[in-house]
Structure formats: C-alpha cells, structure tokens
Amino acid sequence: MEYINATGRRKSAIARVYLSEGSGKITINKLDITKYFPSAILQYVVKQPLATLGVEGKYDIKANLDGGGFTGQSQALRMAIARALVKVNAEDKKALKDKGFLTRDPRAVERKKSGQPKARKRFQFSKR
Image (cartoon, rainbow, N blue to C red; front, side, top):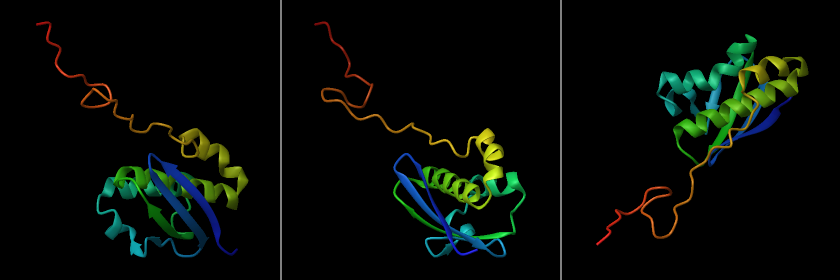
C-alpha cells in the first residue's frame, strides 16, 4: 500500500490527508498531533474514525491543514481521515457514515448585511 489521499472540509478549513500503513503516527503540518492540537478534545475528534474501526495503531497519517480555526480544522481532518479509510476498505463506509464522519457539515458564518452591525443584529430602533 502506497499513500492514499483524501480531502475534508469544514467551514473555511481544508484538510488534505495522506494515509499509509505504519505505527499510528499522526503528523499535521510537519508537527505531531499533540503539538498542533494541545487540547485532548480536539485530538479525540481527529482520532474518532480510527477508534470507530479499531485501527488506531495501524496507519500513519500525514495531513496538511489550511484555513479556519482549530475546531473547523479538527473536524475537516476527521472527515478526510474517514474518507481515506473508506478508500482503503469500502466495507467500513456504513460504520463511518452512521457516525456522521462522511457528511460535509454545510454550516458556515452568515455574511454581514449593510445597515446592520452584524448578520442578524439590528441597530437600536428609535421611534422619535
């Protein structure tokens, strides 16, 4: 098995993943996952597809993350890892799809409208 690549997106974050057989090392932008995502919750989010299939120590993952914040990046990476695992073994697709790892979350920030301070907030109304 050479490299298997996949892409994941969330908000404005884009994750490109390269999956290969190995010892379970996850490298993000040439940094270890513990350095890139110091939060244990975000590390857990990234490893969810691997834990669902029970293949934590089986694959090495190299990822390039771009755009967005840390939450969007972690969820984009989760989606990319899930897509790469489906390319490795198509029978795993149902388990990952049931957990929602293969579904692109369409929610994004609503644009600001003119004449308003934010997207939905209005300036205070004065009758007189």
